[in-house]
Image (cartoon, rainbow, N blue to C red; front, top):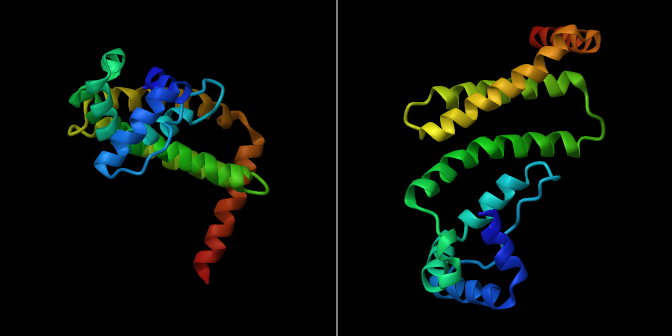
Length: 173
């Protein structure tokens, strides 16, 4: 996907061919976003961008010999479709934290807990492709590694204690 997005982005003729495919299929044209290693969440942004152009990109890959190698199989599209909601959860969490004027530990830790619980659900979902479940398991391992560091953090403990005290007071009223 990344190489395909890059080819389209930097080739005028291919960009115009994609625009024409979109016009023929009545799909809203946009230049596919590309994956940038140094930007968080750019992978899911790219996946979302290209998935919205699926029919047009498939047709373009069918008609352009130089692009045939980039055509995704139905199984790959299935994996992408199943991965998107998982990765979009991280994108949403990043946006919530980034758009906040102040990032509070008492808000971040419950957010991380929700992401962790979501990954556990995905890892256990037998109806999902094994690649997606494996990706969720890897995500859980990484989150556990970093989350375990908060066990030794007085700041995290204090923030959560205050947060739960606040919640208990709110529940009384």
